[in-house]
Image (tube, rainbow, N blue to C red; front, side):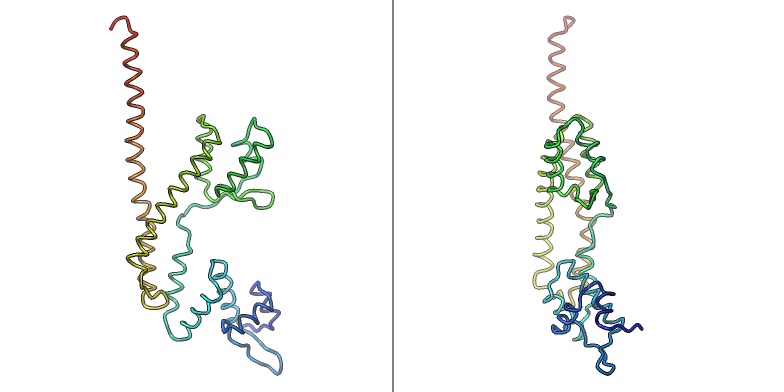
Length: 251
């Protein structure tokens, strides 16, 4: 087991000496073992610090983490709580993010446009979460979405219209997500002891939700597209064939 002075521990954990002392004052981190007047920390302290850092990155407050530590020290099943936390913070897609340079984005979406229009398009794409600036390139959280946009543009749909519909669909999907979360909140999370016996049960419900959401949404979207496309194109085809019959001398 490694031994660390406080500055070495801070460097290994990617934090600061000030944070370590603050965590100790809050009871989040056990005190060091003393050797003379020198406090020595070990790998258990390092693991706790890394866990605190990860939970802070995922949106936990120090008060939340303090509750978890208190539950752990009281002998409650914090493993189940952390399992629930893992389920809550895991991505809901197996899609691997991609990367694109500025020139690649311009080639796909900005040929023949001026600098001001290009910058406005990029601004909207960033606002919608389609791309994220990262140094001299862009992170693409969903290459599939970017591919759909490129295909629509290649098919003749103006990019501004693609960005508009992307914004509308994003809002629609947020409504769907809210309905699923409200459903679980009302029937599963209400009065659940998330720091105790109910944590594992809630985690299992959320695991089951992952494929169910897509299984519900995809058929409804497919059915709606079938009905709308048939109705829209059917009316146009009927009009065209009727016009042909009227204009055809043989009829």
